[in-house]
Image (tube, rainbow, N blue to C red):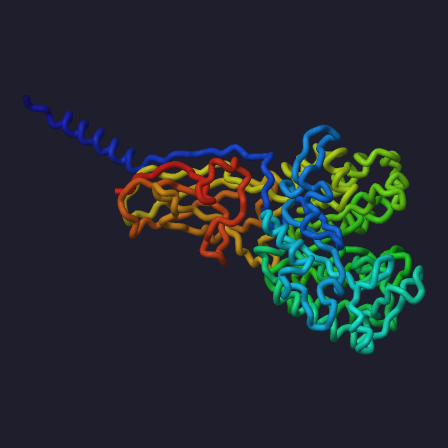
Amino acid sequence: MKLNRQIIIAIISMLAAGIAGAEARTRTVTFEPDTVRVLRNPLQGWVMYMGRTWDENFWTEKGYDSMKVDAGGTTVRVSDYASCAYMRTSWASFEPEEGKYIWNDPDSRLMKLIKSVNDRGLRVAFRIVIDGRDQGQNTPQYVFDAGAEGYYDPRNPGKNRSPYPDDPVFQEKYAKFFRAFAEYFDDPSKVEFIDAYSLGKWGESHSMIYKDNNNKGPVFEWVIDLATSSFKKVPMLIHYHRMLGDPADDGWGSVPEDAEKMIEKAIDLGFSLRHDAFGMHGYYQDWEKAMARKWNFRRPIIMEGGWITGAHHRYWRDPSGLYREGHAEDVRKGEYDASAEARVNMMDFRINDETRSWFEDAFPLVKSFVAHGGYRLYPARVTATDRARRGELVKVESEWRNMGWGYCPTNIPQWNQRYKMAVALIDKDGNPVKVTVEESSDLSKWLKEAPALYTTEIDLNGIKPGKYTWGVALVDVTNGNRPALEMAVAADRHVNGWLPAGGISIK
């Protein structure tokens, strides 16, 4: 049977089209965001506080492993909702004697406490307090024995001595300690951040007492230079308090002329931001709000609430009139709303009653910040071919979204764009055989309501024929391009940190 020439041409054309279609076929995989799972990503999430006298047994002794929620019978572990644990303690507790650093003693109380945090998958954060007013003597006695001048707590004459921050002996001893501290703790795998300007009352950088008030500027320069020369990997924070470094004895007042300039000098050198008066309408005012707006998505903001539920710090006296006496949920809501306005990356569970209040009185807000606060990144869709030939150059398209009101601060100097989006070919055992980093991906620009789109070229040269799976992840380029940041997609969909996004057969 003979076929005429036109029919043969038609058949050949159909076969060619089929083959071409098979080779060029692409598939799109879409992903639904996970709004429930706690993501323990750096500089994102809840910060739980630890008391300065606590030991590693506080999890059970303080009820942190059996915290009631919604004032009901259900209990949860606080550590399951946190990304890091914040230790605000004294210089003396880390160096009781000159050169005797507690991190060299794994059996010390503080090191056991830190280990208990790291063992739960949490990082630690620090504020080292020097000033002893309203507290104990936070500076080691050896500093004064060496000749440092200082002052006593006005409420306790002759007790709780603190050094003048412009005293040369103090500066020499503190700089030696701080550099040793940084040499051990400048490890982002275990340490979240450090409040690196922790002079002044409560370590909050205000209400300073100098030998000479004209030394406010030189002391500031000394502190930030010491911090930036010591910590290279762990993020440093500075308090965007209007009275930063100021000798005003009430810790408040009109905005000094140099306030913004000082804070911005620290930011330019790599500091990120925190404020310790969220929810306090008499302290966190228009100037503070404007500072947050100015630096949104340029530097992460870490919050601390100002009011506590204890009777000596009465939140119901807030000038806003929004907080009812006996209704701790009101002040928790006030802190949450201020955090949303400032687009903070981290919120706080402070110790004891404050933590209980968040879980018993305001647990929906805890879950809401998990869902909407900080940054929550995920791929909305991935489009890739399902067939290719060895040696080909193929393209993978992806769309990424951020569900959070904050941002992923890959732009801070300590990170220096260490986190990137990557595409991998994964074998049948779940191992990546080829990883391609999308160098153009800048996660700090992935903002809510602004999808990020990429077309990544994958070179299949050297790949053995067989069946593979496409995978995407947010990797650490300083650690072998391994998956590093948790994505906001159901945990059970991941394979060794990679999110499978369709199969591919390579010939």
